[in-house]
Image (cartoon, rainbow, N blue to C red; front, side):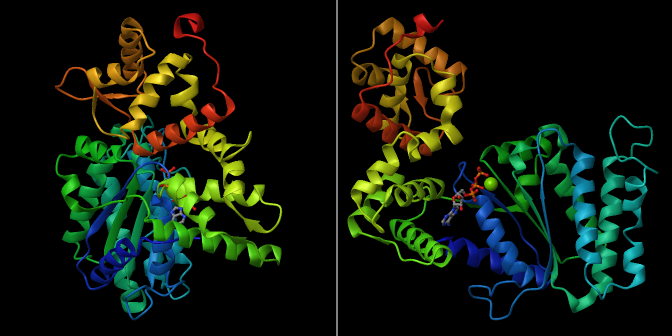
Length: 407
Ligand SMILES: Nc1ncnc2c1ncn2[C@@H]1O[C@H](COP(=O)(O)OP(=O)(O)OP(=O)(O)O)[C@@H](O)[C@H]1O
Ligand SMILES: [Mg+2]
């Protein structure tokens, strides 16, 4: 059901091509939650492994591709360890690997068998540089050994924003690329993906690490791409279920319109419209039912992505009212004067409390260096609030307790 992103995929394929020819550019894919970072990485992985034809490159690629996903509890040594283990598995899977390339990866066994523990707090802690030294040696030896049998190595770290600053991802990338260069190993490409916060994390970890990356900032899909994603979904359903389901042009337009090009919204709204349909022809009514129904798309998205921001932290409907006003401006900066003017039903003192609370709970962002100017943390949150507010209006609101009452 993947649609669009051809500019990004072609550019990433060029990066693979350059890596194959000894001139790698590392890359960073960043964007809002659900914008399609992991999906793009997955498509790139298929192309890199030669499982699908590249969009423009005339020949299939043959990269050793390593994908790791790390979390908030991981450390620097976990980064090295998981990449090393996965790489060694991928390389061993190549039947042609000769014995001495395998021996390059012997160091992994040391920690896997409990000989040396590459773990903080343990006795035999190795320094950051030593860890990377081992890893770079193993990669360089393996690539030397494999020669032109493979195009190179592609290392992908998804959800890189989740790693704590203390895991020093920036330092890791900097050290690894430098060590590889010193060893004359120039066919390794590193790709990261994560929420926008990842850039700050990298900068904090190593001042110049961000300069190593070409940045792909993912934006929403175009209306045409939304339509393609919907059509692909219907084709996939036909294959699976064995019967045809069509969609009226109005319904398709309405889906693209309501989702504003956010891929995770498109998947959810389209799925719910499909579910609401009972005559194998999705029309505008099905879209509405699927969107605003009791277990509809808006509810689902709210529970999956925004519950913390909109429900859990904001007990008062008045506070939510402030968010609705903010959502009219998407993720633009809005001054307090404008909010006051537009949120006419809210008392001045309540507004002050609301702004302070929303800010401290991270539901709104205050403009640095400017007093009394705020924005919502993401545009997709605004799009969801706008659509959700319509539901509340349709079904008659969600209660009117005040923040004071809930406290
Ligand atoms: N280009 C696309 N075309 C159609 N559907 C897409 C596209 N990109 C992503 N999706 C769908 O949108 C949803 C979210 O995508 P994905 O998980 O890749 O986003 P993400 O940016 O990695 O999210 P997160 O920030 O939560 O990790 C998935 O259901 C995916 O199938
Ligand atoms: Mg993801």
